[in-house]
Length: 397
Image (cartoon, rainbow, N blue to C red):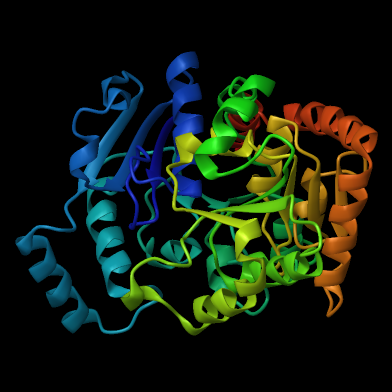
């Protein structure tokens, strides 16, 4: 089949700037390159870093890059904004779609695959003879979504990353027959090969961690939705255990003063009494995450919003870390009671996080059993399984 991929219009593919959605696109493109399944053209924003990327040498995956940053492109975007006013997305995203779709309409494609931008479907006004598929990574299609019935009607298939997201789509029509669930995957090799017991002992001193420290790890954006406030409060409950340390991998609390928010200011105050027990790594490139996770004894990922899936839980499991997390969104689809402690989100969450941490701290055999279960569970989430199932859905259209 000939397939056109319409990306988000913000980050490039190949994923030289990161991005969960962009990395997942790379995974199925890599699989397509290896197995020569389909002729795929990817429409992406341009980025200097992709010019010599090896993915561009593929004979089955092709890339069309839309200029978004030159002075000429910026002028055209502003002109687009003046002519079109407020549309479904920000004018820059709408401009990207216009430019990409102009190229798409000059070719015939069996499938137009929209990556996480369901509003694009509203603008596919002409009949190109293509099936329209939305790959849905977030809760962007539910009964309260603007223009959702028109979007749904213009779509032939919706590939959801979890049953939670599928359930949200089914609030539009409970008789839905368009949805299929394909859970995301990760590069298990990158995570499992990084972990070695000696690595932990050798590299802990770099982060001022001692051999006998009990290290918790949080990986993710430092934003309210990720539950970091509850985790900091839990650390205050544990200040009588000085060898329990928390490593936060994500945006730094103490970065550029101009970028501080009221939430960051609040976290700084909350963490003051336990500042000797908390290590902030700041932002780290994705390829460094496995090595950092390897320094820890358990992962604490207490999201308080409805996570679409919870890739950070899968990454922690692949390393072999017991996980403390919450029953939010798609997280219960990734972990089980054998490898994770799942907590309800309410006003007692910080105290229950602290209790769960102490329980694992005091029971090393329990941690060992959970670690083995975590590694076993993670094998269900390989990038190869994800890509294979993804193409199986498309091939049934």
